[in-house]
Length: 278
Ligand code: FE
Ligand code: FE
Ligand code: ZN
Image 1 (tube, rainbow, N blue to C red):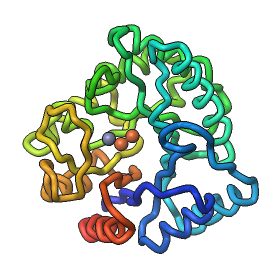
Image 2: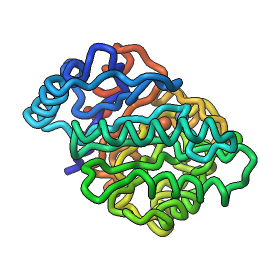
Image 3: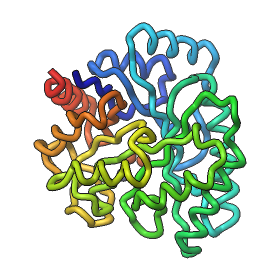
Image 4: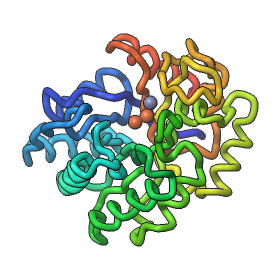
């Protein structure tokens, strides 16, 4: 039986346990949230009581792992030193805070090398991870596959492999596969899903694929645009989205919707996916 977990991105403004309750109402069993304002800035305070309440809800309701998302402004390989320092500071603090929700995922965009070249981008990202991961941490850090917009690092599986190769604490690292991003990056999930996953396995290893961002795309394969679309309304289409959700290689992972939806739309998409799972 296929056992993916399904949920969507939620707002943290009402607190952490509140997100768990919202997801129960939505009918899902995992969710994602920004560790701080997505455009940077301050993080929502995570009070010990609130964290404990969410942990017990997640246990009781048999949720899958949660997928926290680092800020979009966190760029660990920015050319501008102020921007990079700011990113390093966010990474350090986010990872410490995540220990209040042990056993979950922290996903982030690897970075944009902003003209320094892919090689230097990869080196700087790995250096940051080597600085802030520690052996006893209970979070798995996920590098997100990117669409390849501008100077983004991580739109080729090989780039993510190179980052992982350079990180000492490899057992703390995984990858979050964003379906819109890999499609935009040129991996054809419609005509060759098996081929794409085989390629991922060869280059990175499927055991490192720990979470999926489950999005349709507004643009054709290889467009390098990164514009998410509702399930079935984009260029990937419903049939391919269904095949992805049911693919045995992805079984057991949390699938997070980051589609352009209001609450009603997310509830509908969660139930669509649950319907596929039977
Ligand atoms: Fe993302
Ligand atoms: Fe994503
Ligand atoms: Zn995206």
